[in-house]
Image 1 (cartoon, one colour):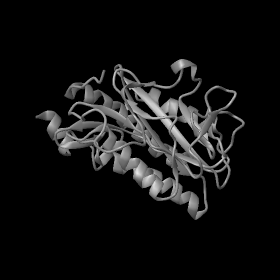
Image 2 (image 1 turned 180 degrees about the vertical axis):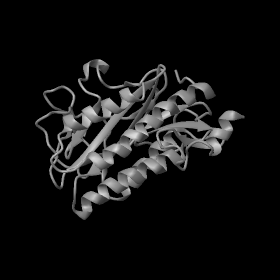
Image 3 (image 1 turned 30 degrees about the horizontal axis):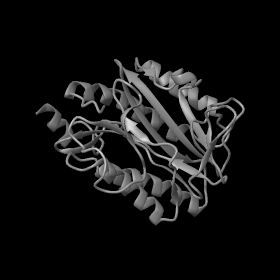
Length: 266
């Protein structure tokens, strides 16, 4: 069942989104060669605690950390480790979530560690662009498949593959709510999009084949063929004025004071 959120509930998700935006800004400075994934995890957990919130992932179904740190061929759910240090030329997907007053926010992005080849930079940019295109379709009156199709078309149009084993999701009082949001599909299909929906849209893209496998730690998902993978995610609210990204800083293009906030206040 898809649960529509009130303006108050969306504001609580937005409060968590601000914290995630702050954490992502910090990570852009922190991620560099020599840093361990455990250091990344500790810094994010400390920031969340300073803001009076709770990590969404730590303890969720037994996950042991605050941040999913997925390097190179790791698609998602990589576990931080003191012995795993970033190296020049790596790419790292950082997936993080937070709980504020019982409501979840979720975001992810992929960073290059130092210099990477042009084709790897292209993978990262195309994945980010596919998220932007998916969000643009998250408008009342569209169908869920319009989001999925926009992502798939952009990714495959650049010669990359969409991971099919993992999908986006609704979010609110639970980390994972209905509907599931595949990053592939046909336009005009699926549930009708309505104001009050809050969606975590998250394309995961590979340079090779889309198949993945899960390692012995029972969490880390890697590409079956060893190709590199990128991952981007935002939590988005649907309003009559269009999609509003909740996981950006104050004053961002979809932040407070924009059309979404005016819609919520209406």
